[in-house]
Image (cartoon, rainbow, N blue to C red; front, side):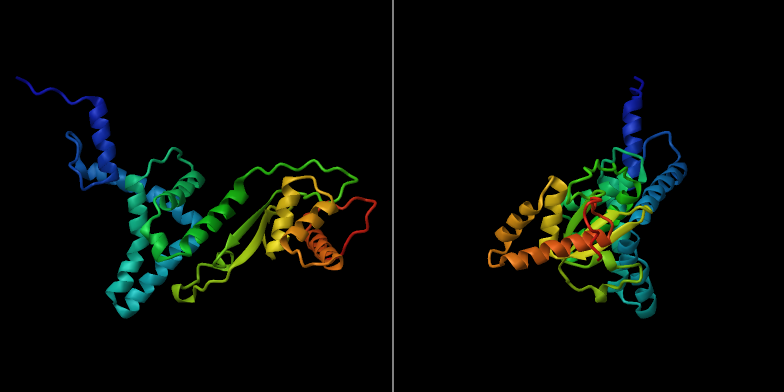
Length: 270
């Protein structure tokens, strides 16, 4: 009896499985060397998308550790250099990407690590924040931000959408020259937005200012709303101290061109 021919669906499944994991048995009727070329193209393409979005994270695990290994010839440094490539290979093998676009693939790479509570995030507790911030930079470069409808005679209206982020590490200051031994905790709250020139901007703010800005962004507020917020957070503040915080916030937002100043109000200089 002739062997039952393998269905196209089965062949396709075997082909895809091998592309993900070349340690598996290759499907019949396919030249392994040609499949390897195809796999290399796909894998390198996915890697290039991720490396493009996370240059700082990649450099901290890759080039820097590679240079250390070349200099000191220590196995530990070689293992650290390999970690980033191992993460990419694991993601390529196990993830279920639903989009071919590089911003979606990079987001799914970050979500793959966070959803699984990957061990790499335990070994390097700053990595999750760094991946989030680097992806946010890409997101702000590409997202369509609607211009808010401003009411002319109303105070406390933001001129664009902003994001408030709380970090334990100052990842927003790191560059590709950052070294692992330079990592130090420095809890902070930052305000992030895209300005009129389409540049991503970052400003460190106090936790109180952050809470006030979030309230302004969520609702149409008046000054009394901000006063009540400050009283709930800092019940020991008197009226003068509360007013100083409100004036300080308006001066900051005015300097950053993030607040609408009605024509009948004097512009506050930051």
